[in-house]
Length: 87
Image (cartoon, rainbow, N blue to C red; front, side, top):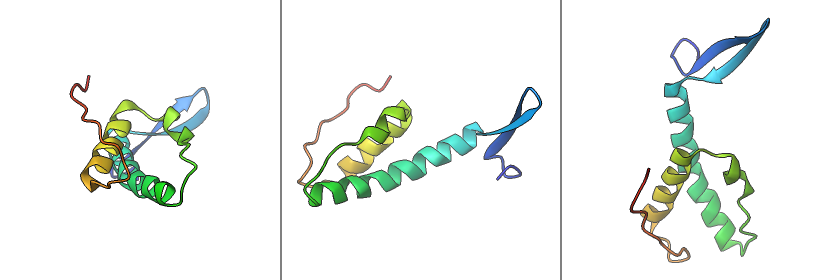
């Protein structure tokens, strides 16, 4: 993963720290946003609960990709809201 440019090594003092590169972060966001609509659909079909507390720690780009994925499914169990401005 490091050789392909998805991860970077930084040093915090004497300790090495592994983090996503911009390329790796984009890929991780895309993968998560593709998996989450399926999880959301499974929760809706099971009758709940609908708590998605894991989304509070996500960045804006991932959230918008998730909403795009849900809207592309066109599942009648969802209320669709069109996002017009994406700053």
